[in-house]
Image (cartoon, rainbow, N blue to C red):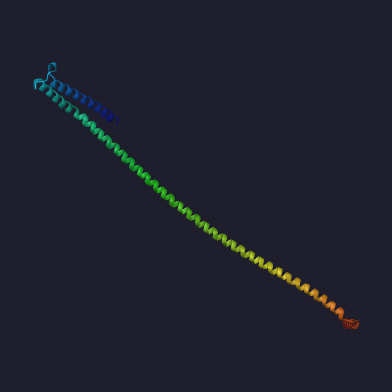
Length: 200
């Protein structure tokens, strides 16, 4: 690769030198054929002009054949270099496209993985909500049952207390009524009946 670059540079310099020489010889040939002695115009085609044109043609043909191969090699080398660069760029492009495709696949797989994770979290959240609702329902039922039992116990206790109060008041009232309505004869009679029962 370095040799072909060196060869191309040398060929390019050689082409430039050849072109400069051609221009110089052509300019000299034209100047010689166009001018005369003491600045007078030429009166026609002279033999020296023919030799100059022939010399120029021979030089041009010689340079053409001499430089044909190096110029052709230089141009072919340049074409090969461009082809090689294009192939390298094409390979890099294919590799970049392959990497881009891989990255796109990775991104797509990450998106799918993210969707799976989100779906799993949603599923777990729903399950946790159902579990919490079930537990709270059971706790509410327990609290309701306990409250019902407490109410029943309080009701029984209040009922017993009320019955006791009513009984005590009834006894007190009955005692008061008995005290008001019983006479001493009734008391003596009750005592006699009690004694008869005890003796019997």
